[in-house]
Image (cartoon, rainbow, N blue to C red; front, side):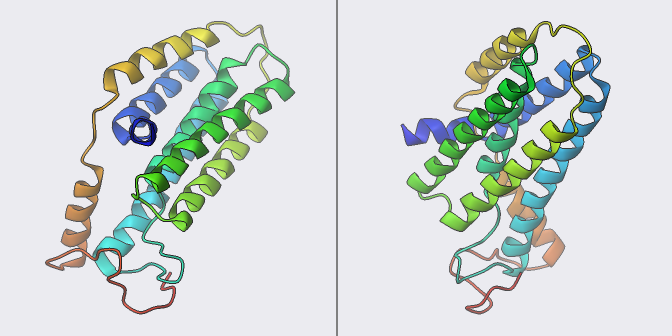
Amino acid sequence: MWSTLTNVGDIAVMMPAAVIVSFWLLSQRKWPGACLWPLLFALGCALVLASKLAFVGWGLGCAALDFTGISGHTLLACTVFPMVSYLALGAFKARWRFIGAAVGWLFGGLIGYSRLMVHAHSSSEVLSGLGLGLIITLVFVVLDTPPQRAARGEWLLFGVLALMMTLQFGVKAPGQDMVTRIALRLSGHSAPYLRGHWRNTHCTL
């Protein structure tokens, strides 16, 4: 069960889903959201990448919290799923759209929990992904403009995403390998820092 859930949060599944959300916003001429969503999503991904590069390349993390970088699976799931459920309820009143976003975020949290169960991340790494995903979701729903007309095609978004996720499920992107190669090139080190290879026992970030 937990391995199945954790695979849902893989970059090979979540990145195409994020792109579909962007194209859907554009197709519906939701211009503010179409600009805001990619910006917020890219910012979240950049923070995840920066935190991972900092540890893998330079050993910058927090031994006391067992923190080596923000959980990418958790961040991706906690931004994509709230967006999908929020947009799918576009024809409903604001409170239902907000509830939809909350349900999506909770499902993303379940994927984050799966990362703990498969021993891929520590609690601090998952919680940081949860928190960052929550911030991105809140910023979007607060700044999003209410629909000016009756919504249409929202459930088609669910269908397209379900098809894509079915096709992509089980595909694993070499994300960590790419992070390691980039970190070593930037830092000039011959070997990456690994969990437990801390510069000291205190937080260095």
